[in-house]
Length: 203
Image (tube, rainbow, N blue to C red; front, side):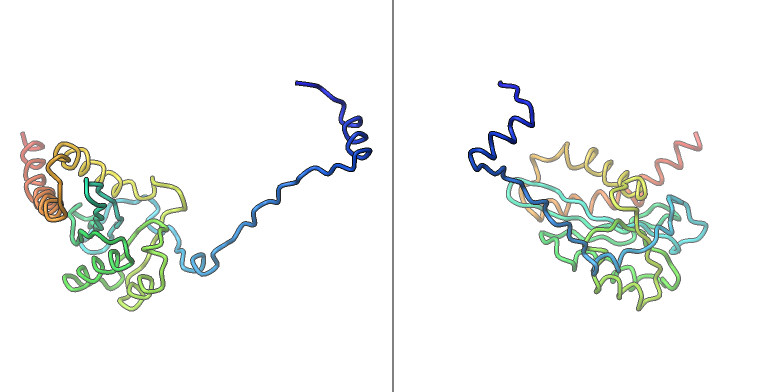
């Protein structure tokens, strides 16, 4: 490596009519449409509810199997921690988040209920935002890039993948097998797990 004084380098470049190549900075684009649909973090990490069907959390995770990617969308009631709606799909289209909310609407009175999510495209699109608005559901969102704002949801997916998916991954060779396993796990999570915890705490 040769060390050259910057003034000498400038002189040599001028004498030889040389021009340094300057890389242009990439422009930063702000998605104004998405920005306008981002909601306040109303939940603010308060993962407790004193009444059922008042505070929900939702998110989407993926399950990678040998032949495809499978997606799981879940809504949990913070009152009892139970999964109140979910959908398993091979598609990550916007309908994945819409369908679980529609299922929830059919089951419960959600007027003035709160649903908290991240700022992903599934929750910052007009169809989803309007669905909640039309049904008088309050929308809350995590701060961008902060997983702790939806820690209960992250915990659910973490236990699901660790205690269910990873230990049976070799068996999951088709969508139907993944769907069946998800159904079994949520049945256990909502019912048997709750009874187990009650018995354990009582002993």
